Image (cartoon, rainbow, N blue to C red; front, top):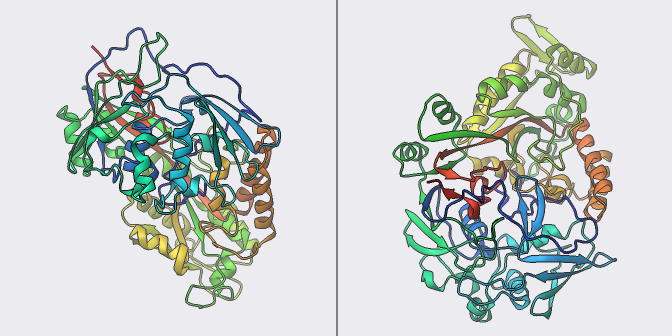
Length: 583
């Protein structure tokens, strides 16, 4: 999959703690972090969503809400991602085996697994699902892209009712990255729509709930416009807990559409909401300072990051040249970028500005990615003196007074630029203000320009009309290959200089080569070394200057059992089938 940087990376390719070249029979998964002896069945849990899904058909995912409901709650995939261990575990596939050439995968489905209507799940359903993903008329907005390998589809053939053979166009590092995306849909319910070219219209929100057949823990009970979606237990869900009791424990899961954060917090206090993910720092502080039935949890760094990058495009989209300008010369000098990085007080931003709900960042990969983030990268020391030294080595001169310094380049140009920041993002605006103060101490005049997020994206991806941007990566998976659209020099989300015809620098060419190697390397240790070298190069060259990784913070009623929120989407509902209401 190609990472959608600074946008919601909808598809979960999750993690690659790779099972080397193959995976044999695996144990029946049981409830994680569970108290199988004390978990009770029954009851309804209410969860806040900011916007409704657009469909109950996950192949047509175009938003976070659709991803949550249609994929995470209504669908079971061939493999699953255990958020506690950040490892793959078997899902509807009890085992899978990769051929020696790495191109063919034989997947064995669980015997006796059924859809919510009682019909057995078979290899024909897997073949049908892949067909629907690649269907031209369906034109799946995200899933088709995620399931292409070298722009070619994966072929599927049913060997017998429980065995399906998948053939990849080329060797991939981890087939699990694709199996985890392959949620199984019921061919007996959707084949007629696909054959008629109407698959994209199937299972819209106004569909008859009884016609929506699920392979996941829940199925649809009712939809109340843009206010509420009520899911009910799938009576034929395949998963059981450690005692052999069928999951999920809950009778119902009520998804409450509550866009306004103030309203969400009020509903928490009124016990009309039980669970809210990604609450604001001020709300976390309030809940942490009071006693009551609602507790806030700092889950730690999410996968998203906040970083700065400078415009290294040689020209704007309108043809105006940039590579001969003074700013381009500053921005393309790694000593300048290192000086800026050294001048930023990350600790103050993380601990004070963002109230301790962020971690200083020294990498483009968040520390929330516990498997693939390189932990031995040098931490960038905050030092005005060292930053000034780097600038001096690059030919910059400080004038003015100690109280009001002014920095000039060797051609006597005053060093001044504008930092674009999304106006809707309060943490990033606060961060920009601190950076502005930090750079002013070096004599750099940095103006902060808050603009709408869509405008920010257009500037770096289309018009190239900007100096610097404070944005970052918003990713939903930990797998190294998911960073391809960010790291490859010819990629659309290569933020500082996208879609290069040939690599503009030697280090970008080196990253291209390393990335191609890791994407086909099935040995976990070798792959980690390749991806680690990429992280090292980015840390040295600083095409993006990492600032912080903000934390995922959740608020939950104390009555919820097995609540084990994750910093990775879908946060508190990754183990929705294991949540229960305490007696």
